[in-house]
Length: 325
Image (cartoon, rainbow, N blue to C red; front, top):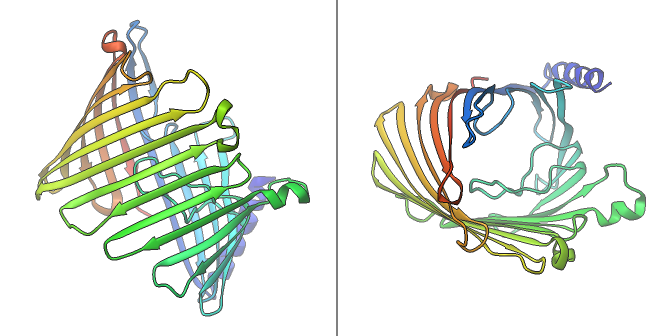
């Protein structure tokens, strides 16, 4: 049924494209990974370093001055093969100060910009965004209508806000329907050589803090020492509300060096612990990327993990990202 709906919407989008600007897009990810755990039981699988299963995404977008629509699909190596990520449309009002988005929404607007890219507003329902008179400040709310009763629907509200300034940008969102889940991000952008300088956090189950609550905080700084060489430091802390829980800590320095315009080498050294360093894990992760320009990139990586500073496990992988359409 989803395939029929998706094809019908795609046909409608393409037909509308005769009278509007239409954009076809997509990405493809794949890779091979050799996993050698500490017990020596090796395995090899088709797997991408970030996306997991081989993934092909296809999108079709129609844009008019005051409205638009998008179909977002994936073809992935799993049981159902085909996945419908989103079918939704949007319209602008009051000289584009207000945007209403309606449907199965797959693009979030309130997203933190560090590695985790936390977001809450990709919902099946509708979202309202308002550009305030203060330049750079946008606020709004998303409503999740995914099979809820009217009473529950009224409680499934996500509030969000973002602010962009010449020196920094920040974003926050609060989900009433997920036991008070909250995300926040802040990035300083006032120094060109400081390519990253930000924090992000995700607080989950705040309404059930003593049982399921968690608070995850990350900070990252990256400084371009010279054009080819960048130094990075990433810190992480994890707090849990359950009695007797320990503080989780992460310390990950790294370097990036561009040997050629298309070839960049990376090295991350991660030290992490789930119990304030009563036990400590070490991860060494070198990899290289070869840029294919706007088309995508090739990567080759090696990772060795020492759990409790012993019993090393190894991972070797290579893969391909295509962003050519």
